[in-house]
Length: 184
Image 1 (cartoon, one colour):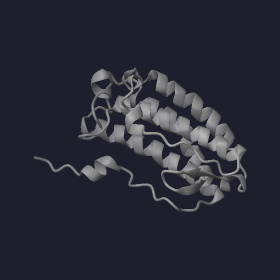
Image 2 (cartoon, one colour):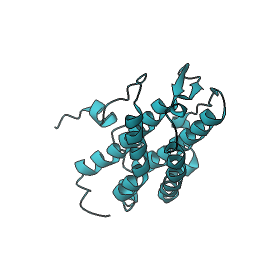
Image 3 (cartoon, helix red, strand yellow):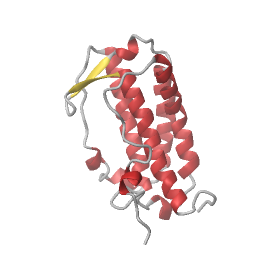
Image 4 (cartoon, rainbow, N blue to C red):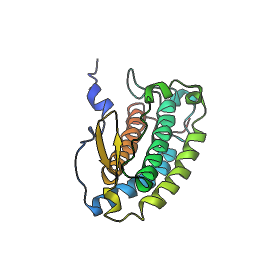
């Protein structure tokens, strides 16, 4: 029986390293990653049928369907956090229970609504992000669960990582199952 590296399945691009600082150019690259993520995810899983969408990306993990809905939920929260940080002085954001959100009935819907949300949300989000100055990228919000402030530049890096992290969950599942060359 083939050995499964559960850590590699869980973190296909590695874990995000918190507490880093990012240059303006690095942040621009992260924004570019955020800009293309909805298209890339749609191209990968947009035509997958229910059997594939309901397959967990790893044993004990979310299905691809749940994963797509989670990314939409998560990035909606990130967009709101961005706007709060730009319009208030170090606002305290509201964390959410992502695992509990994934149990709500909308996580069983077709992925089409969440792919549309991501496409339109990222258009709006990137429109804001691309205009930020170096000074604005240092604006912060306070995350009570982490008990620390996050600069927008770090948050942008986190969500560039987050989108790619979940994209790779679906992609590596597709590779393992030889789904990347066929549409079903």
